Structure formats: structure tokens, C-alpha cells
Image (cartoon, rainbow, N blue to C red; front, top):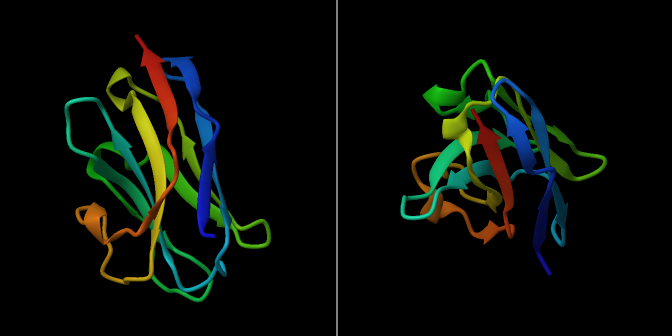
Amino acid sequence: QVQLVESGGGSVQAGGSLRLACAVSGFPYSNYVMGWFRQVPGKEREGVARILTVGGSGKPIYRDSVKGRFTISQDSAKKTLYLQMNSLKPEDTAMYYCATSLRLDATLVRPHFFDVWGQGTQVTVSS
């Protein structure tokens, strides 16, 4: 059974940092697109960062508002995806989800191309 489990969310003050983790199980951690998304109640889910797993090529992609502050990375041996979030802002407050897709055209603006989603982890940034 394919499963993604996020962890690492919490409450921090503006300027603080958090590292989210997404543990992957049930499928080989190679040649997949992995992404981090976030959603605020009443708003559409938005893509945050995207990366190809082992076997893929290309650089990570970020939404403009998090460039220079967030870093997506992975540990293929542990089959875990990470999102290091620095210089957090109140507008980063959201439920964060990791997701995966076999489609290489699954991008940040195409969340519907992602097949499997985790349950989410809440990030709250106070001013």
C-alpha cells in the first residue's frame, strides 16, 4: 500500500524555522515526482516545491514566494522527503502536504497530476 506520512509541523514565530519530513512507503523511491503543497481553509491548494527522486534529473522547483527561504531535499536511503523552511512568515501558515506522481509533467501548478497524498501537517507562523 502506497503511503506518505508527513511530520515536523508546529507553531513558530516569524523568522523561525521548521523542517518537514515525508516518509514514503509502499513503492520504490525512484523515478517519481515528489512535491510539497500547502492549503489554507477556503483557498486552493498551492504548490510549494517539487523534486524528482533518484533516477530523475532536473533541479528542484519552488514557488516564487518561498525561493531563497525553503529547500526541498531527500534521503533516498531513508525514502524520506524534506522541506527545510527558514525565515518563516505569517503568510506561510497552512496545512502542508507531500504528494507523489509518476507523471514527469506533474508540476506545482498541476496538483491534480499527483496521485498519492499524505494526511498533512500544520504549520502556524505568528507575527
